[in-house]
Image (cartoon, rainbow, N blue to C red; front, side, top):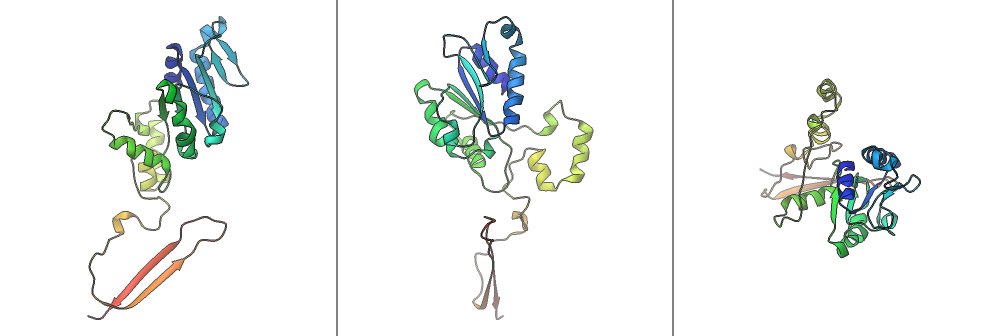
Length: 227
């Protein structure tokens, strides 16, 4: 994303990079500064370390990096290239309420980077929607960790011993898996019953969540038939 931002900046575009964590902002910022170090040292571009901005003075051409979680933390700025990094940690309204309208008047572009989050999530929903798109509006990419030349091959081979199969496939192989690694049952062992005999006894077990946990409620239904 730093490379994408720098290339767009040199083409005269206005870039806004947003991510929920300050550490991610600093990493992006260091990469951008390194890529533009020669013109920065020569005073060709203006740099503000406090606001994490690099700009061409007197123009709208600019790179800015900031933290953002939701629509409110993203307001007050605009861009023609919006980059939302660690999108799975952001609220969905960061895109729907502010991000998308931000690009209306300049026919801008957006890039989303995320790691799959357990359970159903807005980042997965957006990816699935984009992947199914046939209009050409979206492009989707997945990258397994083995494709990263900067990661240790030995470590990647060894980490399989410390992760569940589902977690490894999600985090390392970048597979789009609907199952939640923390779930008691996965989809392979759940069978949908569409026809059954008359039941003489039906038992329903409910495991309600606590008031403060916000967890899902578990419900199990079992029936007994006379054969």
